[in-house]
Length: 325
Image (cartoon, rainbow, N blue to C red):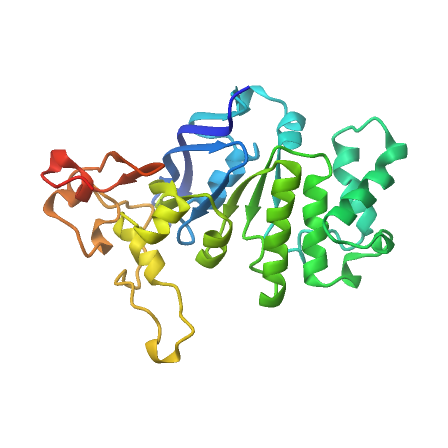
């Protein structure tokens, strides 16, 4: 069996969207040639601005959205050749908002056992016992089995969502902003719970987050996405201590500090985000890049190997007359 739980090779997803009144439709390249590999037991964090393609990529990895082109594999098997139940048993999501992702008309026990019913578990007599064991594992008292989501706090609801995702023991979990809707005091509890469950159940995580503090706490590797492409990928410690791509540097500089005298950080990215329907030529980041060179507006950068990954930037390309770093 391969050590890779999930692998994406040159994955693309294009949507045809309206270009305006009486102007027909134009292609929007939401995911534009992504290469990604997630090893067993890893925590890969996917970061980037809103609209860069993170959620679209996650939907493809969950088998909810077919790629326009490219290859997606789970345990070496193409997702397109697998039935939906097999994909669901292998990869499960934890959604951003526990207030909207749980059915308010269903009891906690019914919500947690839903995957057992939908995915055809043949032993319904064991469902309650398994659900209660999973509730205990995620820190929920068994007495709330017959309660409803409205009777629980935000942190408890997210624990229900985690229990639902793990009840069938998937190999990989995709966490889409798993703590952003929670109070700060509860966020660390949920993150620590996810770390404990990863160690106890041998899970692999793909975490989508805007919160770089969460990423630094959880991730073993980081992939930075910009306009549908992974512009930098590497070991988490290397990315945080020595970022290579100017966009990664700007993201790290955007983190607010507790010191009120420092004010709001200036990332020098400007207020305008590029129009994804009209991609810049060459390196798509060059209009916002403080280190842009003449070739950046003309030549698409190629991936350059770095610690545990790669970076797509002319600054590190020897063929472009720069010193490799």
